[in-house]
Image (cartoon, rainbow, N blue to C red; front, side, top):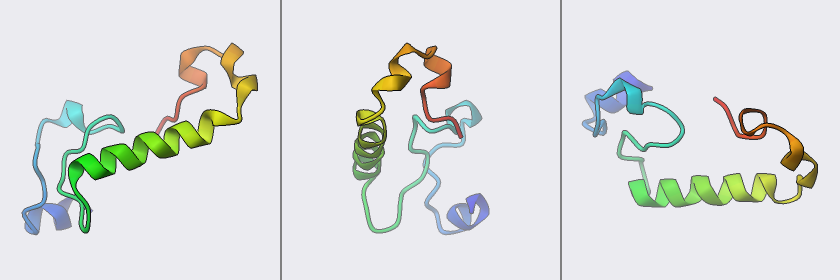
Length: 66
């Protein structure tokens, strides 16, 4: 995927420490980078909205890890 995005000129950042779920480092197809970030945050909030039982867990165990 990275190579295809690179060849298509869609990679916007080559700083490897930014390659995680908190940063958009490529230009998404059919949406803006800000749109992707907003969709991710909305998905994250919706996923955890009904999981009150997770509140007692340590932060590392209650966040989405990829």
